[in-house]
Image (cartoon, rainbow, N blue to C red; front, side, top):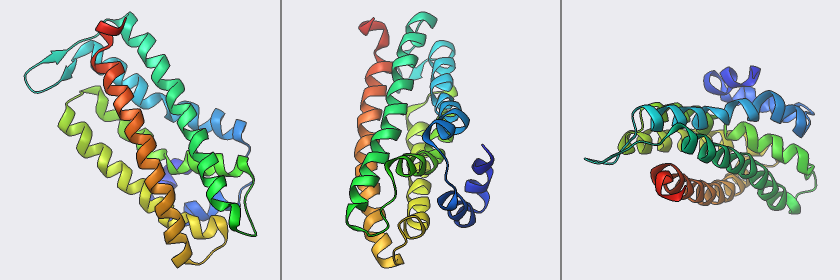
Length: 194
């Protein structure tokens, strides 16, 4: 958790520090991912059971039982998405001589996703347009972290790092879109699903 503030205040320095560490996936998950991935889930639980999703004139409120079940599914999906992105980074790094181990790629992906986790606070009062604006800002910041960190992480030039980080970002956007579509289906129509 010590890296969270650094990622928000001095990301270049913090990403270099993260790249130099030899953190295990279990340590990263226990001290970072499991806690931060709970932010959007808990926020969505509170928002959907207390205020409901405001869909421009129609508000959908979930029962606590339904929201808890759907929240658990959403939480597992977030955890799996981090591992998937780590595997994507590992695959994209296959052509580089200093290819990092898969575990380092998963840890790297977890830290890059930090702004996305924190942006989940907006789900406390789930208004669709606010969620979109805040989510887009968090996505752009994650892209900025990628741009800063990939050259150091893979020990490549900034120009090559831009190409690789762009590829990672594009795949990450697709994963995020899949998560968003699933979350809209899960949180928005949860009463009909369960």
